[in-house]
Amino acid sequence: MARALTPLEARVLGVLVEKQATVPDTYPLSLNALVAGCNQKTARDPVIEAGDADVLAAIDGLKSMSLVFETSGGRVSKYEHNAARGLNVPAPAAALLAVLMLRGPQTAAELRANVERIHRFADIAAVEAVLSELADRYPPRALLLPRAPGAREPRWAHLLCGEVQMTAPREPMGASDADPISVGELVALKAELARQGSELAELRALVQKMAAELGIATDTNA
Image (cartoon, rainbow, N blue to C red):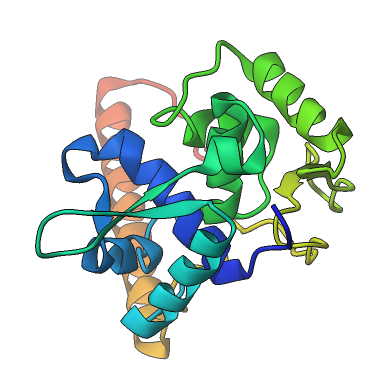
C-alpha cells in the first residue's frame, strides 16, 4: 500500500470485504450496492452519507493501489476487492481490518463477535494473536489503544488511514442514544406512580381487614 487510505476509501474496502462474505450472490458489487453499503445505518461507525461521485472517487483511489478491481462484462460496472493481497496480510487479518474500517475501534471480544460472518475465530486469543501480528509488522496495520477511563478492556484500531483519531467508546443504547423524556411524559409518569401507590394502599388495607377477621396477626409497618 503506497499511501494511507482516506476514510471513505477504507469504508469502501471494508464494505467489499464484508459483502463478499455476507451476500456472495450479489458480489462483485455495483456502484449502487456499494454506495448503499457505505451508507448503512447499522454496523457502521461513523454513519455517513456518501454520494455516487464520492464513492467513485474512492474506488479510483483504491484501484490505483491495486486494492480494488473493476470487473468486465455486463452493462453495469462491478467492483471487487484485493484486500488480502494488496495489504499483504492473510485472510483472517483482512477480515479483522475490514470490521475495524467499518465499525471503528473495538475490543478483541467485540471484534470476534462482529467479524464472525466474515471469518470465524476459535476464541478471543486467536483474534488477539492476529491483531498482535498486525501491530508488530512494518508498517504496522493495527494498534492497541490505551484503555479509556471507565472501560474494562482496551480497544484495537486499524492504521490504514494513518494515525488514529482517539474517540470515546460508544455508549450502549438507553444512555446517550435514548430520546429525552418530555415534560408531558414526566407528568404522566408521576400520575401513574400516584395511581399505583393508591391501589397499593387499598390492597394493604384490604389484606389487614381480612387478616383481622381471620384472627391473623399482620405487620402493619410492612
